[in-house]
Length: 100
Image (cartoon, rainbow, N blue to C red; front, side, top):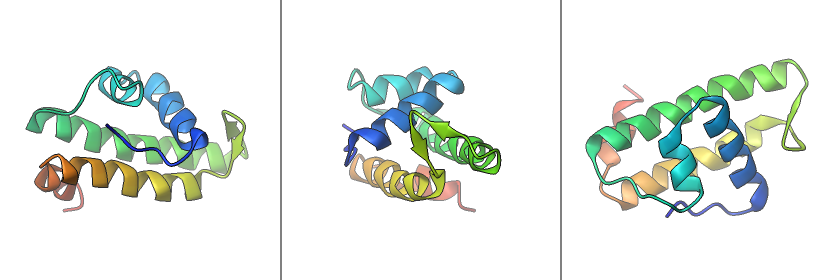
């Protein structure tokens, strides 16, 4: 299970999962599924970076997401949350591959 530290993080994650039409991310956030394959780990990693791109646009336009203004801090928290989740579940290689 992804361990969000607060409701704002979860709400932002779900907002972007819906925006990006990522059913895996949405299922993870709603505790309906766990990442169990390398392919899913790669998909979650790609979702995180797409979410960052969208968050940059939100900040650039001075908008909010689910009442949260300023996406940078939330994205910094979520990189640790998503990366930690994947590493705990044996998918460190897939998470790290996106950095290369």
